[in-house]
Length: 457
Image (tube, rainbow, N blue to C red; front, side, top):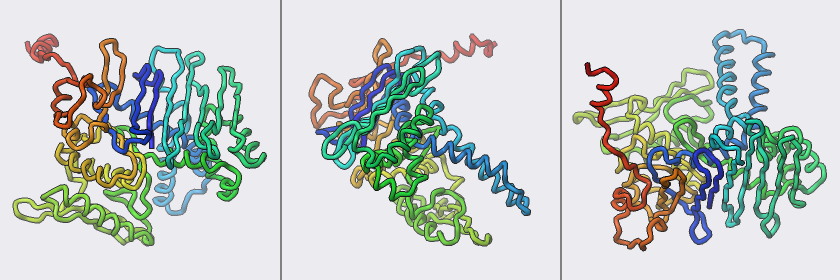
């Protein structure tokens, strides 16, 4: 779980500190409010970029292998089968290319019109132990490069730097490993050689993740500190959803694609398990949904095709409807379902605009139910002030924009000079501007605009 974030020159944040701990423990639910354009999505992007950055080298190797297959493959006698197989490979290349270079992930995050370094510091807590991971980027002739990377966490019984790597604008790399990071010289030599080849285009966490993925697991366990592996696995298990990207930790016994898809016949139990889970999710939330189920097609030799349907009561009749015909809000709830399960299972989940397209009362009920069973950490942005009624004031944050354009994020329990009482209506106080973070808008004269563009003549 995360306890704090610190930004310097990251997107619209000149300097921002985001503390999400209480009594030295990470808060399990964090709701972020603020006016449009204040930078809420920038905070979400920092978590997403951390997750993406760990996979860059593995993605690059996957793309390289896929391209080699496409260039060297003999065509299949079955033209349709050959086309579909190559299409799958090309789609895999397309999906991963965006996240195969560190620069393509973080370059656009660098604050515009500044030459000062960009820093992102992630403070976290794993198994009761605190640590932080820090990335610093700089510019050289307008090009963004990774200047330093540091991981501070438990070494043996005490906390310290597991590694620190830095470079100057001439490309000279300085590497400092904790003496306890590697248990033999060979593993350390392999990592030093990989850093010389890849670091800068990829982080050390990404380099090690690729090494671990391609190396005998017993060798890694015997020769590399388990604390490094714990941190990487924790960062890789972040689930997230935003308008332009999403990622979830796959639940082993459930379908990956919930609305429709195909699976091998020996995995058919996943359809039954997912179907039951969706019944328990949707039927309590919707008074008109009486059943939800998968229609299956077993015509293929080794695969089952499936498609989600629901039975809804309309005009006192029970109508069967394909789920793809549902409203955008209901489809959004289906997309969020795996993330809600992830956070109950103990993962960190980040969601941008959790309430987008969903009725206030529905999302309020869901947050209330999650609050009862949460084992992980849920961090989300929202404009839905109804949620304020369900959460402790310590979980509520507002991103404030000062008159000079600088920004700060504050917990509502600390956002006012007066002590908040238990009977204070936080929602009403926020909407009345007591904590800032709301739009202060003047009237827009649409008639005047129309007249000025000449459409009213």
